[in-house]
Amino acid sequence: MPKAQKARAIGFNHVAIVVDDIEAALAFYGRLFAFTLRSKSKSQAFIDLGDQFLALQQGKTQPDDGRHFGLVVDDKEMARKALAAAGVKTEPGPFLDFLDPWGNRVEIIGYDNIQFTKAPNVLRGMGLTQLAKNKQALKELAEKGMAPG
Image 1 (cartoon, rainbow, N blue to C red):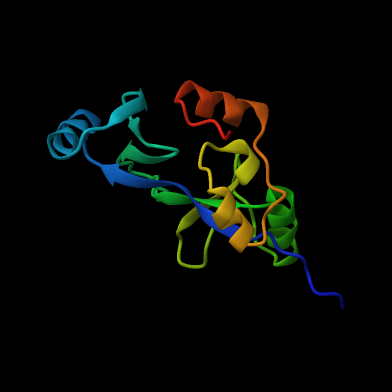
Image 2: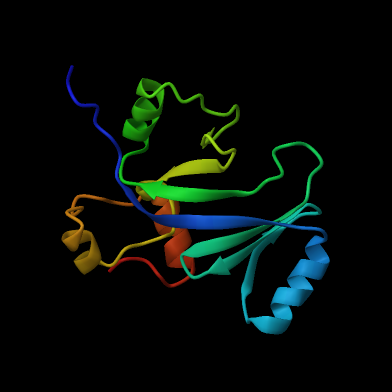
């Protein structure tokens, strides 16, 4: 049987943490750090960390309380195939999420679709010289003055 191809994990897009109160959490972190608020609703807020972000999510009562991390891969479709080949069920919804055996939620994000950017020398050292960003990711980076040049 041929060895299954796998996507390569290359970084974190974001980390999500659970808080009791979004406004109180923003006030707390605002007292500690200068940051730009990416977006906010009644139940979540996103704090920009350059080309990555911290997600604050108000605690939930259902078993999936929102805690997860976004893992950046070089090839999202290859990751989808590897999950299927391993018999790992993906979660319903618009994202490629799955639960590990311990209940941790992992969101798979393709490098092409996110702001997170590795320096060319780092990509070269990882053997990933062919990675590129899609138009939306480039637009978001350009709006922040971080477009690759």
